Image (cartoon, rainbow, N blue to C red; front, side, top):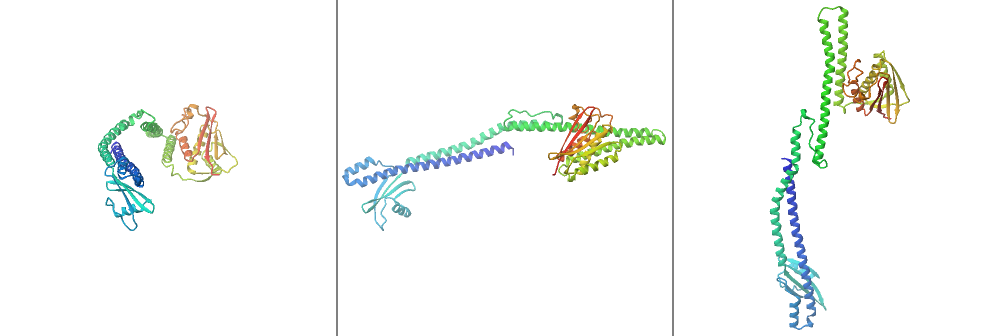
Length: 447
């Protein structure tokens, strides 16, 4: 069932229920008000009856009857009776009251009652030592007619109103949800070939407008992601294809004719060099994909970063004997939570870039505390990065225009940025073209 249909039914049923409840309450409210109003009229007549009864000795029989007719215009089916109350006896009443009602009339000093169609009030007065019960009853014919008329009109209103509510609710719901239907049709037409299209926003301040804005923002993110993916695949293909082409070309040249052992050795060295580049590219791609897809599953442990940094420096010096790095560690402690393997990958990548792009000139490494973070500074005197290109260096496969003659895959900094990000740290790079680069790596301290 569509939302428009479901919403129309809910609105119709709710409105119908409200209409019925309102009609019922209106009927009972008017009925109660009518009964109270008629009761007040009966009480006034009871007061007049009491007054005439108490003063009847002052009038002759003829005067009494004339006064009674003058001040007591009869209500429909009105009866008045004044009964002397005698202990132990139940008097005769004009009406055949139920036994319980008779007891209440004799016991209650002021009493109001309803019995089937008629309504009455009573009062017990004392004249000397004798108690008298005054009862006035009447039928509220006008009230009954009013209530019957009101009930018939309420029923008619409900019978006509409910179908009208259903028709109006379905029409209004359809009309107000029509923009959503149009947006759904438009959204269904957007695909990979036209991701640049956007939904039309008529009123940005209502819910439909906010939905369209949110959808457009999502499309914008998808478009950026899609373009980044296309660029990533293009760059990855290029970076993988180049060493593969070089390997295949060198192999074809080597086997094209018989060569000397020295020439074969040179060809194999070139093939090994290109294979090493390809292996590094593939490993970095796999690691980047693994980190991006399983950030929550990265294990961590307590690391004393100063000792850990010295250990990484020794290992790097052993594998790259031509480099020149100087490590300066200020007063600690430098305790963090992290994944040793991932952090080592990031730091080695940063050291490798510093040494590689400075032709193995002196690289200064400094470790110090700032606020609640440790800061690892890596400074070189290499080729540097231009301001225009500095903002793009964390994009996968992006390489500066002055690095074309230096071996690299363009994945290292992207991988570093992702590793530092999942460790809740930051990495900032400052550089001047031709003067060198300084990297600031910040990681949150445990203590």
